[in-house]
Length: 357
Image 1 (cartoon, rainbow, N blue to C red):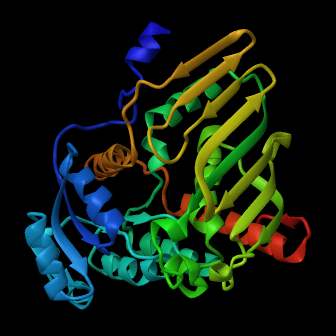
Image 2 (tube, helix red, strand yellow; image 1 turned 135 degrees about the vertical axis):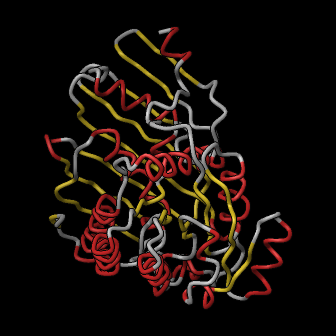
């Protein structure tokens, strides 16, 4: 166990330690500037060289403030401006604005790391995957939990049989989005931009995707309920969402999420012989709790938060680009999440069990 603790933050995924991937960051919201950009600056294999925003003036101002080489507009990006100054593209715009920029990146032969969820609808996500595959351009979906040490160590324990056979999963992710961004007209509450809804697309996806990563099993069907009692959520169906997902091997998962509740995140996987819990799971410093018989252990020494998780994520992506290694999660992995989310919303609307296609 002592050796396991010492190796807790080891990069078990790393293939190379040489080379640099230069990034263009597109979409200069708070996540890009406050989390993603510092993550790249602190990474081993990455460098931010271009910022892309709605106007040249805004992009150049941000580039000067953050000591980045170039700033260009979206239109200039589409025209291929500064393409010699970056090797790969990071897309951090709202959901429904991902596809057009990734299509341009494909024509420029630039690998892409795209924020999740990968688009607003299954159809647009399918188009994204087809575009990148046709152009032979690597596409990775930015699931930062995949490089979080607590999640990777939990995966190791599941593989080693710590749980016995997985039986059930409970995932939960909530936040008060109107306190965080006090604007009822924000894009997360606009279905034309966010996609199928707000809570499952933005928050529930963490529980769903992390469970897929941990178990390497897929949900086959789902039932769900959704409610939007607050007036600010009148255009989206899922201010509050709860789902029951039926996974392969008779594993059942409950997933709850809300954009109008106290901040709380956890993911608990229970098996025939043990239990693994991440709490907090998706925001703050992820903490791993283990139970098996009379054994109870909490591993909370890690200092990983969103920025450090993103640093690992960017280095993972760069590692795969530099080594020509296989990317997990690629576009098809992200596409499956979109299909799951679509089924959750269909089940919430119909009140029926929906098979996941």
